[in-house]
Structures are given as structure tokens and as C-alpha cells.
Image (tube, rainbow, N blue to C red; front, top):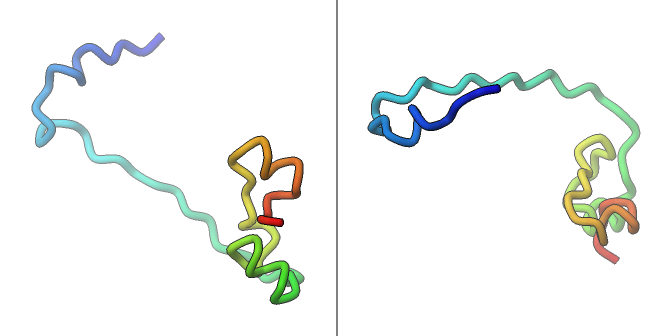
Length: 62
């Protein structure tokens, strides 16, 4: 188990730098523009439902 207590007491300028992994986006079938507007993206793989209500609607606004 990781102990975060040492990070809570360390000055922010001494914390380790984070590293991100961002995969290349592959071309795919697009949402039609109306659905893309409701989902906030025309790419289905980028439509991520973060709330339970959105999950039941497929990640897009009604």
C-alpha cells in the first residue's frame, strides 16, 4: 500500500513530475453532426460517460 503522508508534507515544488501516456487516435466512423453536438465530440471513442445518468443515455445529452 502506498503512503501519501510524505507527499502531504512536502513543498509542491519538490514533488515528482507526472508523466502522461497519450495514445495515437485511430480514424473511425464518426457520429452524425447532431449526435456529435449532443455528445461533445464526433468521435465515438472519445464520448466518455462520466455520470450515471449519462451512462444510461449512452454518454450524450438528450
